[in-house]
Length: 306
Length: 99
Image (cartoon, rainbow over all chains, first blue to last red; front, top):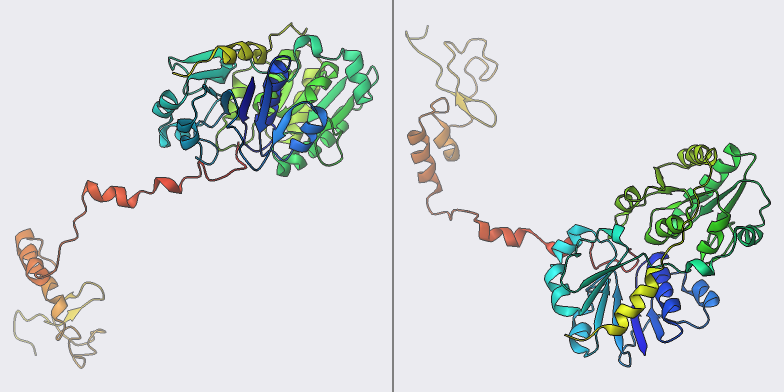
């Protein structure tokens, strides 16, 4: 089958979650991702087998119509397309600003225009959960547990020896990069005996995607509180020092508070202080995790147009 | 010399002209010892406020109604509220870089 996946949205999150599904579906189904992330080029480099399109929405030949996060589309443009397709329509329900849900009357809209709703992670606490056609999976992750590099291999990717490792993962918007750079500098000053590495798509950091490959090496991670960073760190057992960024639709602070491995901070200096405290404790043992993207593939295969 | 019981009939004040009420114009800064005429003598739109210190509602309401006769009342109802609220002014579905 061919699945069309509408994954518009700024930053990394929508595209990475879409890529996670595409990878999980790849042995049996092709996924065409429609995205406008500024990082689409890097993801194409790393996933040459996944079709990522921009500009024109081509879905007429798809067997499934999937929409990530924004049931009416990021610009409110999807209602005629949803009404006009005879294929099963699946909504991927990450957490959403309840004001958006109310102002656009999304509950009846989703009930009328979607045949399946998938909540990618029980902790998302999505406002539209509880709909009759909703299912909850584990978080969708770009790597399944058996695909993760070993801690030694991850350290080799980072060029880190046996010292404690603090990883700063710059994600989100480009204008937030300066905060991560200051955090890396503060960590370097506060942790003279640790190896500090900054991973970022721009700037002076290591340009690497997906950052999840590097998490097995990290004794502490400093990052945002977006969907992928929080869930990836939780899956890998990596303590996360997180800055919750203001977003129009996503409630990052709420997500961070729902995860026990997350310490919320505001400033780079607070991040360094929190990281120093966390490095004094032994890193929690990583548990085997379920990749919800694999669960979702089975649900999408079985979806029927109602 | 002023008659017994005399009070100055000029109206003074800026936004709310009211009777002066002084017992003598001598030394009065508003009329300069009675040399300046009542500036409100020709102001018909101040007529309703001549009894400014009177809080008899019926008295001033009747006077105001007479003055306002011929003008349409600008009464707002709940139906007008929908013209004052612009839901499309929120940021949702307007920013393609949002997340």
